[in-house]
Image 1: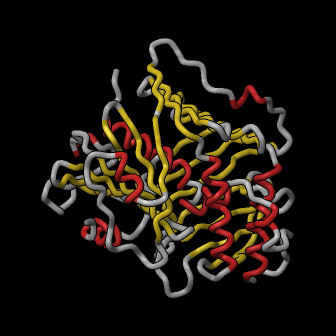
Image 2: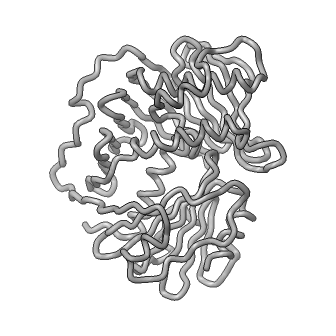
Length: 358
């Protein structure tokens, strides 16, 4: 069966959320591999004293260093505030990439080998190939640590805990004091520096999502074949997502046949992080990413026929005018163009972004 544009938008959002549930944009960034220049910002050693900014920075950089050099295999659980849960087997190697095989619900596999990525969906019976996300996360990590070093983000050591039988140090990363917004908490293995648990917290401090290891092996026997493209099962469709990346919407405008609208309002500290144009079944989908290094929102825009009722995870809102909304997502149609805004900002800020599009 042919995939619809609503399904594809949902799929893109699901993949981004699989990264966000590790702690939104900063979590994805801190999972990425660091560089020598980045490590030079701070001394990467755990600290005994609690609450010191420098100690928290050192722990985060040590976590980046561990991601760059530590292969691992482990069983993880993800829990969302909606009550939905998943369990997945994760394999990661610093040179070969990352593989996530979902155990509950079963059937889906996500593989990224730094060159390409593949999503095998058992429910939709298709294998989608697209560009690697891991390389982009490498670049984002530089921005995150730099923002912490410049005081644009706050990081502090808040305690210790035990996860998967290992002692961890807990680091809270949040917007600067006086700037409301979600925050992230990381549980960092004291022995290896590997992240063992993360939580995404609302501006009020409520847990929005949690992801943690039930068990982990930091000396696994892995092979390059573990990160090879999945074999296409019988009866499945194979698809290739064609994507072009741009730095500005003005540059991307040449690749589409409809006006690209941009928000006039963005929360404090938010900037454009990138623009992509996706060719999908004869339609163009424009993806604009905005963020402050800790949190982010993504705006999808397409001239394809996008029935709002088909956008997964949405609930009827009171906005009227052919729009629907739900937790962290808004969708509407205007002038023959369909829009979807996905993010973890408070509802009033999400609405202000929507209202400011021009």
